[in-house]
Length: 218
Image (cartoon, rainbow, N blue to C red; front, side):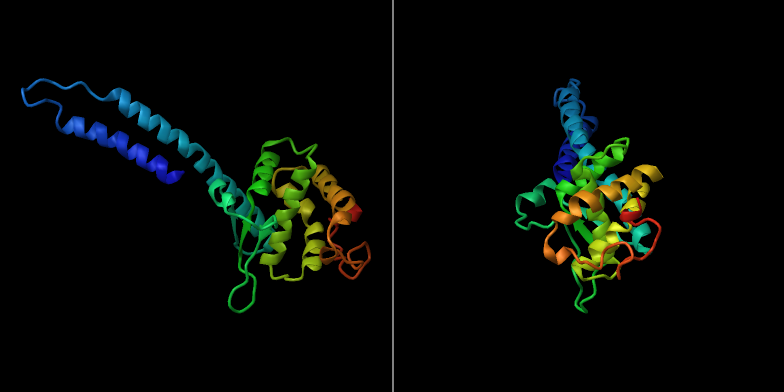
């Protein structure tokens, strides 16, 4: 979309530039300025840039949140509408591993979770939908992979203990953030597949990091 917008803006400025360079015809008569065409192409091009700008702004916000969760700079890519057309994977987020087997410090979040995160940021955060609760957790979960955790059950448990912090970084107050973390622990975690759950993820369990933000303490 950004390429189409740039092309339309280039056409608009090209038309205007051509008229400015040669405002008179061969007989010396002043040619009418192509204002209608310039405004049409420029307005469409500028309109197409608005979602591109919003997409970049959201990614920058998520970069900051994920970097705070990981403790080092990381990058969050949000899937575009075009990329979604060719996506056949069912995962909501993805962190690839490098040649050395270590997770990269970059993640791809699918378009659905990114759109729900955008909605969560714009909302008052007091009453998030289930999809928004899951989207905040997906960001937290992928942050754990970028931090180096490769096991899914461990990453899931570590993420749940940081969901409240993720929600606060996205704009929630402490009470709203704790409620979101508790909602995931209570309503979503029990429905996850076996590879994402472990009995060690419980208050006092082997994976309880006692951060004071665990969902079971919310």
